[in-house]
Length: 323
Image (cartoon, rainbow, N blue to C red; front, side, top):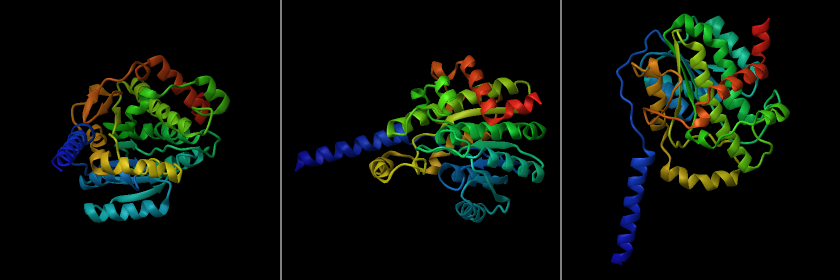
């Protein structure tokens, strides 16, 4: 009996240490107010996006919930308005799996909103499928959609500066690898739809997020707009909503035991959005509310530029620039 108690105690102690030291993360604290500022948060009807939007609303910002699901987004907007006491929280439809939807969102926003101070590209998914434009679903939603959205809104952000673009990536970028020949032939980051390919596509899409942020910073140098990428931590969210039922059942116990809740998961996003004095760090990558060095594949300026130019062609931005 005593041996069983000792083993149980050791397991509980190990779990507590692992959770609070490895998984829990750091809480960001700031008294910054955002009255008169406007922020867009994609994928903000649930998870860390909703938690981020709630914090910004509590600081007085006008917050645009840019989401695909109207019913869920309007319910989230209602919740945030009630909890924050801020009536300036509104839903605007955005489906990142459709480049037409991205363009329609940008057009509507630019016609109706006079300023944009913060753009948080938070939405992301892991799973199979193809976008409306024929791209791999993960590649389209996690990279091409945010790439196009950011570029379409940049002029307004420059007019409103100082402004920030915050891209939610992941430390799983370390397992990513961009095959440009595959992208040219398959319009996807991977060549299959199995569980392994879905995971690989997600990792590579997060590498794309970091490289996009790096090249964006180079192109914005000397302007009033800065940009940052980040790892939010291991979060219990709807990221795997496209997974099969049995895959979700496998992940559920780990999520309950180890993953952070959305409020904790939003802390590094809030740090990159609100922390003062980080303008010289534009283009860099953050985790646990602090600057982190990235691997060689994520600091390759040549690779970042090549990805940017390909993304311009795939989204039709290069033809707009040429014309």
